[in-house]
Length: 559
Image (cartoon, rainbow, N blue to C red):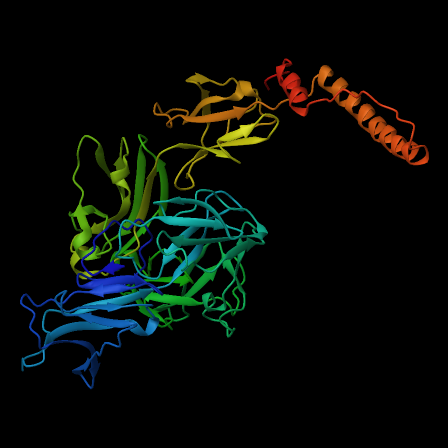
C-alpha cells in the first residue's frame, strides 16, 4: 500500500519531464494507493473530487466510493483508497467541504501518476554488451524499494539497486524481467537481447504495449532495434542564416523507433529550421536513449552534457563525475554548482554540494568535474550540474546516476554442496562496474594463488572437502574486501573393496536361496513324506551398511 506522505531515495534515471512535484505521488499500476485529506479538521461534509480544466476553468467532479475499488474512510480522516490502479486513475485529486463556497481544492491538490514497470536496455561502454535497468515511467514514491530480478521466469536475486548486476551479451533465448518486492505479481514484461553489434542491438518485448510506435495487440511480442549512439546533426542552409537539425543514429532508423525532440529540455515537435543566432538548445531521443544537448552556436545559449550518465563504483573508491557546458558570452556566470538529488521530488530533493576534504571541484575551460573520494552508500544519488540561474529557469535534466556498491560472495548452485559437484563463486556487486577490475580471492583470510588471471568468478570443479571454508574477495588497489561467506562441502560416501565383496556375495546367495526354495517346494509336492532342511544364514542389511560405513573414506585431491 502506498501513502501520499511517503518520501524516499530514488536511485534511477530521471527523465526530462517526470511530472512529479511537491504534491505528487507516483504509484505502480495494479497496486493500491492512499490519498490523505489535506484539511486540518475534516468534517462529515468532506468529499473527494477530481480536478480538470475545461475552457480555461477548473471543473471539479465528485468521487463516489463503490466499496470495492474505491473506498473513503471517515474514521481515517476521509482517506480515499484506490485499489487496482489503472492508467485512467492518473488525475488531480482533492478533498473539501461541500458546504464551502470557495475554491474547494485551493492548496490541497494531489497529483496522482500511475507507473508502468519496464526493463530498459542501455548500451554499455564495453563493446557488444548492454546493461539492464528496472525502470518506472515516473519516480516511485514508495520506499524502501527492493528490486527483484528474474531470468527465464525464475527468481535470480533481489537488491536495492534498479540496475542488473551483470553486463548482457547477445542471448536471444534468455529472457529477463523485474518486479518490486511486495508486488511480485506485477512483473515487468520479459525482454531478450539479440543482434548485438558495435552499432546496434535488438530488444524483443513480451508485450506489444512496450512498442508504442507499432500497431500490435497488447499481449503479442514486439521488437525494436536501438542505436548505440544518438546525435543531433547541425547543417547550415544555403543562405547561411538558418540551420537544419537531424537526429542521427549509429544504425538505420526504422518505423518501430519513436524519435522525440526537445527544445530547452521541453518536448517539442521536430524543428524545421533554426536561426543561426538562436539562444535555445536542442536534443533528441530514440525511445529512452538521449543525445547530448547542442547549440547552433555555443556563444548564444546554455547547454549541459555529461561524459557518463550512469556510474557504478565500489565503496571506498574515488569517482570523477564530469560535465561539459556552454553559456552565452554576454552572461559569463561565475556561479557553477553541483547538486545531489536523493528524492523523487526534484525541487525539494536537490542539495547543494560543498567542497570538503572528501569532495573536490575542478574546472578547466568549459568542463567541470566533481570528485568524490572514499565513497559510501549515502553517495548513491543523481548528480546535476547547474550554471548561474539555471536552477530557476531550466526544467529538470537527466543528470549522472551514481550507484555505490559493496562486494558480496555468491555460491552457485548453493552454499552447501557435495564432493564432486561444480561450484561457481561470484564476487557480486549491485550494478555492473564501469571499469575492468582485477580481483583477489581469499579462503580463510589467505589469498588463493591461482595460475590464471583472477576475475570476479572462481570455479571449483570438482569441489572437494578441502575447498570448504570462509571465502571473501576484493578488488586490487582497494583495501576493503567483502564479508566472508562459508562454503560447506559434504563428503560423498564411497564403496570400499570390502563393501563390494559383500554386495557380490549377496548377489550370489540371494538367487541361490530362491532357487533352492523353489526346488524344495517342488520336491515336497512330489514326495510329501520326504523332508529336506536347509540351514541358510540370514544376512542383516543393517550389518552390511554398518560394515560399509566403518571402512576408510577416500578423498579427492584439491585442485
